[in-house]
Length: 231
Image 1: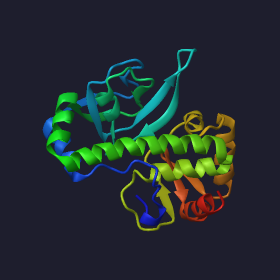
Image 2: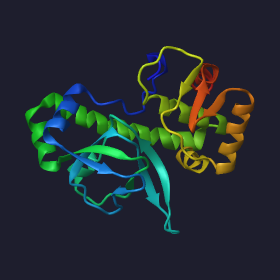
Image 3: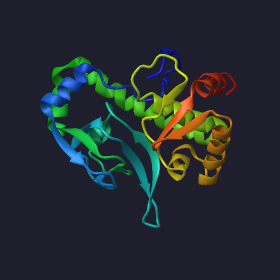
Image 4: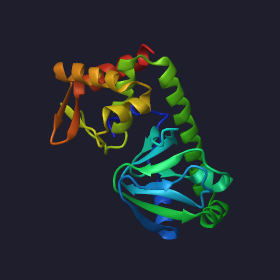
């Protein structure tokens, strides 16, 4: 991630070595191709999931048969823990938006793990609470932030998934979504996202190269401060 002063407290941090060791010992590896539905709406979840590689989207099904992004999760993050414990039908689908390599840990092993290791239990519960905070912030973002700040929030969220970086002229985003998908995540239309991107591009604050998106140090440093001091 970026220097620690820019960490977004409501975003899910990567799991600890303790948690990773647990899922590697108790879990099994499963592969999902881009576009695959990992968990369907209404499914009873039987495993906890850990993303070793790839990206997963939480999606609302729409009446048209399409789906709409609600949030995304990337490498070193778990999902499905609360649903595995709760054992009620889930209201969202989980889809692989890039090829994924996941660890799956059975509900029985999750329960046994938290009963035998208090610190592991605390970390699982901390992750569940972090997901709740992230959902709250998403609602706050959609209702309270102006459009330009929503885009900066999106950039900052993705940069939390990168390894520590010393300040540099450009930061590479680890994921390049379509304008429609970005709009779904931050509550903007495709046209609004496109217009903001075009403005930043004309000002030399973002650039595209070989299918990758880069944001300038100036945009992150200056706009990050404005994002939190003015909101």
